[in-house]
Image (tube, rainbow, N blue to C red; front, side):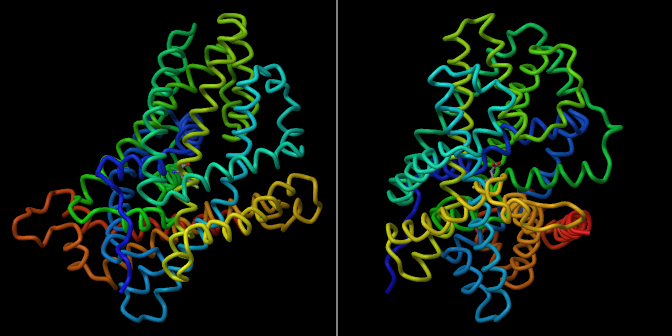
Length: 467
Ligand code: PFF
């Protein structure tokens, strides 16, 4: 007789926790950069279509698998596939993916923590120095911040679902929304901000090609935390009385609204800092933008709003991104935690200890792969490029395996677990409940074109990345 599974305490708690997972570095930095270099409003339009037409159905599928099975992803595939020897392999894949994504995401979260610390202590001139980032990521300070980040994640997760994850999200998410709104309003009052808004929103359809379409889908998929087992795990903590469709809609909407607002924050800030900006410069990576470009803007703000004002703006910005990163890191770490608890019978603290040590060692190896340890720095070569361990983890798990996991979950729900059970979970087969258009669409799309699209993204990524 197993103990009853922990649950989120309320619908709002679930939505905030799931939105906390979805809103992350991907929204606040990845999305604005992707939109800026890929046709502004045109990219936004395609992105929104993908969220609605592809990602929302996949999210509903993942939540349903979790809630129906009341298990972690591996347990869910095992239970709902009824003894199939093959489907648990998909479960393993969904377990390894969050484990490895957490490893690289931890590294970026550590950097954010370091920048937050420097911003709060008023060291903007240091952060704005173009050589600082390279030196910082290879300094020993990173390991100190590492301990702080691991401690925060553990502190939240040891509290469990309701008193840990949900409580953390209920505190951090409202503050995150307020900080975001405040910063957007502030940035829009800066000189020349409107040029940034224009650049961000005016559609340039000439930039749209197969590569951009592919990146819009990958961005949306990552942003909604799909293919990582998170929604399966959070679905397993969702109360039976909740309607999956309406909660998923809220999560997708919140996530997209935050991504959109982040563009309204970053683009005007960039244009007000440099009205003649060469937009090619914006094609820098998200990491470049956040850790080298934005600090220059914060420093320049000192001339208009003074030393304390500029430090406050920088601190709020880094706190915003840090909160977004921590709530995401919590959600992704919860996936292997729930597996160790569910499959191996570990207590939560023991699972956390095992994971903190093992993931910590891998994150440390990534930290050493920026030049400090040679074999980790030139870990492998493919497509004629030498890749560090950090790059490889991103290429393999973020770029390649995510769409594959998405594809497998669609096929699993429709063809193995079977539509009828999926309908029951969505409450569509309940005679007192009339199935909405969205639910009918989800059913149709998951069994037809969504697996095809996800397969194409997967195959395209493999062809482009590794050969
Ligand atoms: N939705 C998150 C983001 O946009 O950053 C994706 C994510 C990444 C969630 C890494 C969790 C995580 F650890």
